[in-house]
Structures are given as C-alpha cells and as structure tokens.
Image 1: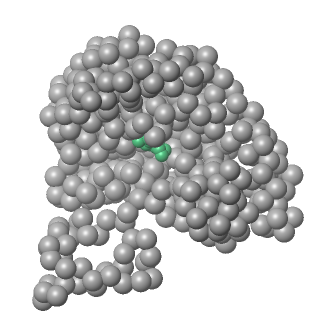
Image 2: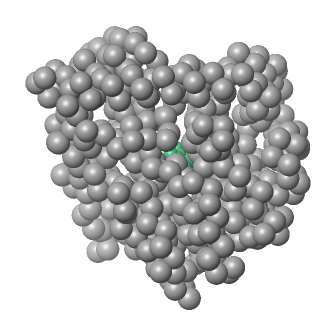
Image 3: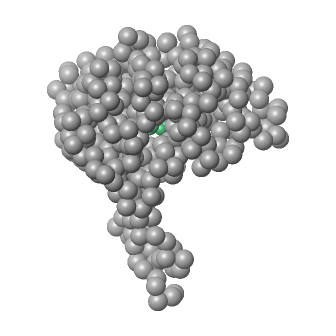
Length: 386
Ligand code: PMP
C-alpha cells in the first residue's frame, strides 16, 4: 500500500470499505465522488440470489417495453448479423436518413448515440469544463448529475414542484457559469410532463449561450396530440437539443440506440467528441426497421395506456397513492420504499427503489403486460398487508 491509499466504500456495498491503491487515489476528486448509477436488478441476478426460477420472475424495473422487440426489428437484426465482421457505418447514414425524413430535419441535425444516454454524455463532454454549471430538477433522471459530475462541473439541483420541474425556478438558477440545462419531459422517475406551450416559453427565455436539453425518452407514450413538437423549434433556438431513444416504446433497450436533434453546428461539436463507432450495426438496422413499424409502436402505446389504467385502478383499490404519470411507469407511494422493494423481490417481482432520487417512500413500477401488472398488485397487497 502506498502512502496515498485511502479507504472508501465500494459502490455496491456502502457499508463495507475497500482499499484504494494508486492510481485510483489520484483520480480527480470529482470522479471519486461520483455516486454510481444503480440499474434495475436483472432477472438472472435475483434468480441466483433467491434460487428462483427466472421464468417466474416479473421485472418492472427499467421502463422496458413489456411486449419485447417488434418482429420487423428482429428480422432486421437477423439479416444484419451476417455482417458483424465489418465495422458499423460510423456516420449512421441510413438511420440518420430515415430519422431525417421522419422528423423533417436535415441529416446534419442528427447525432446518433449508444442509447440516448450517450447523447446526454456527449452534451456534457462538448460543453462542460470544471467549474461550469449544469441545471436539472430535483427527482429528475439520474444521468444528468452523473454526466455533469464526470466533467468536474457543478450540478445545480432545483427543487421540484409537485414532483415535476419548476421551470421558473430553473430559469432563475441560470448564472453566467451555466452551460447546460436538462429537462426530462416526461420525467423519469416521476412521470410528470410539461405541455408544448410552457415548454417552448421556457426554451425561449433561456439565454442563447446556454444549451437546453429536452430529454424526450418517453415521448411515444404521450397521446398523439401531445407528442412533442420541440424538434420543429430548433430552427428558432439553436441552443436546443432534443434527445429521443429506441429503448422504450421501440423495444430495443439492449441494443443501445438513441439520437439527438440539434442545430447542425452543435451536432458537429458532438460528433467530434463522439466515439467513431458508437452505435453498432445491429442497433442501426433494428432502429431503421422499428422506426418504419408504426403499428408496433402505436400498439405498444395502447398496451401501456391500458396497463396504466389497470395499475391505477388496482392501487386505488388498495388505497395506495401514486403520482399521475405520462410515461410507461408509475411512481407509487408505499411509505417505506426499501422495505416494500425487498418484500416484492422475495415474491419474485422486481421494481425500482428511488431513494437515490430523494424519494425514499416511493417505488417506481414499469407498466407491464396485464398478467405482470396483476402479479405486482397482488405482491404489493401482501407486502403492505392489505
Ligand atoms: N432519459 C430518460 C428520462 C430515461 O428514463 C432514460 C432511460 N432510463 C434515458 C434517458 C436513457 O435511455 P437510453 O440510454 O436507453 O436511451
């Protein structure tokens, strides 16, 4: 052990201690201080831990599409598999062309990401240096603080209003050091949503030198009339970046593919810091097929709406409160999130604890298929003694 060794808790077990040798002890303080992202528990992991049959486990923990990938995506993956010996198209020509046609933007406005998470990271890489500030809301998606802190920048968390973004307060938090503002719409994990008029009014008021990221990972779940028109605002606000994903309604979470829409001059910057082959060829092929398969996405949105009503009705019957949601998940007030989470796990139901979002009394439950929702409601009733 060197003299600079330090004892810090490992992320997976904050109660234990691990010895940090050089060079870890010399990593920047802002990296050592990062609170790691905690993903939803994988089915196989719970099966191993509790000796359960994986087939009997219900996972409603990561806002995945419970219907699985669409048949057209699967066929495209099978075809593309034959060519995995080649590097993917680093420019994503075909996928960007398909998206450009769909969104009525130029291909130069599009940046592909290894998940939309990658787009969020690219924004922080391109715009944040140590000492800069990024603004996000309390209870907003966990990657905003993560990606901000990884650059040594300062995260400004603005208190939520009714679990959602307080846009006026976020605007008031802008300082000369602010470089980026993140808004999740709908927000994960709260499911809150801001309509087009107040959203555009906010974007219009943010100083032009500050990048506004509108994270629309759940846009496809909104009623068609409510789906965001923010992409069409980019011509007016060159500091606006809209991010979307194929991980949710399109059912391709494991392939990791998302995109950002922005002014071409901003896209050019993000492309400079982007890994040359950040989106693999299977993902590109599947995304093109998924984008064309409108019926699959619409049916997924419909199944989600029905599942949401099922969960809302079941929770109301149990006398359990929840935050009305515009996404494919529901923030449920169970009183003691950690205890009920553990009880549900023992019952083979994986949901998401959200204590790390400052919501220790809640659990986030992804809307599943009818039988999965029923499993959750029954397990919840047992867990809380109703
Ligand atoms: N934004 C929000 C609001 C999310 O909830 C998620 C997924 N948890 C993402 C972005 C990132 O998803 P992906 O990287 O799979 O596109």
